Image (tube, rainbow, N blue to C red; front, side, top):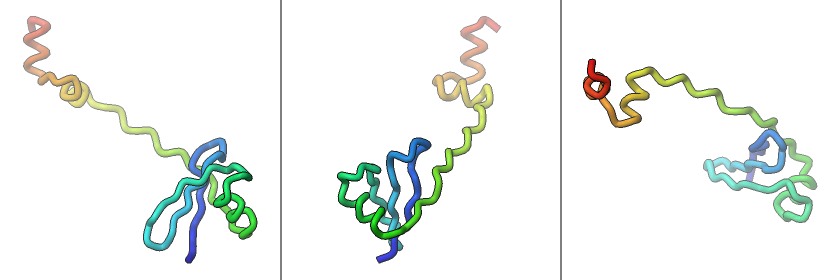
Length: 80
């Protein structure tokens, strides 16, 4: 079975191991962990961690919807 490895965080303390079917296992980078020891002895290399992109800022309407208010409800609340 073939695995791909990627560091799952910026401190490289967890590996993400994925197989051909998309099954994922999270492996702590602790030498006492048998899966990590197998990774080290296999000679495989892990891809570096890539931080997820920052989310797009919410529009005013999206912020209102998230708060459970419509624009008209907010205007009414503000007396506009």
